[in-house]
Image 1 (cartoon, rainbow, N blue to C red):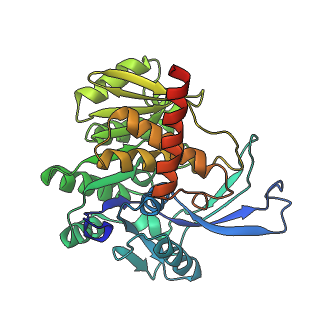
Image 2 (cartoon, helix red, strand yellow):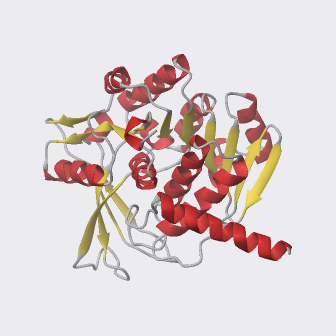
Length: 325
């Protein structure tokens, strides 16, 4: 079956135009910026498409130059944008940031009231009627953009449940979007409906303060989750299943820009999951995808192709065999 014949991964969320200061420049002093795109779900869609996995994006952009830029770039990545509505009454969100291999990343958002935040359950229903996806992916970010966006997320989960389509959910907690109490109120009901859950260890601490992380993970596994992937502060990743857990190290050797690494990991994991890989294979491919992404200055520039991932993962396997001999 060719990529064009496969059912796509459907992502729901906001994709923004991103302006990145030249490497080494602080945003408040920069005279030159590079233009790209960004947004958690859009990054995952672009990464999957780069691997050869069909992906479609459901969302909205403004009827403006930034919106046309975003659509053009997403199409160029191979993502199906037929379900993206153009909102005449609003604007396309924008993000301005610096790059830093080891220091703090300074990010300024211009997205309050943006077209992306106006996505609704109707957008999801229309997209679902067009095709039945192989898997859906969404993050906590979209749920926090607006009440309408939260309704779109719920509609997506309802449609997926009705058609037995796997749901991937990345917590992606951003306190600049909503206070911690709001995240604690909204997220549990959404996470409990996902078959694949991604979360940082710090995010779990915010969602469930004072509770052991292992207890929270067991609670998620007692719900719909088949696997929970925890991104640890020491740059390792742990996959938890009903049968146990396994931890794999980061494969990153050089960092130009860490932004987008988490989304690349998600895409690598999901691509392997759809191909039938076990959790170990999924984690390895996810870590490999992230290792490519951080060697470039934007969320999407360094994303690997399928053959590049294959070669890198094969090299990792060969190295492990040499160690065991």
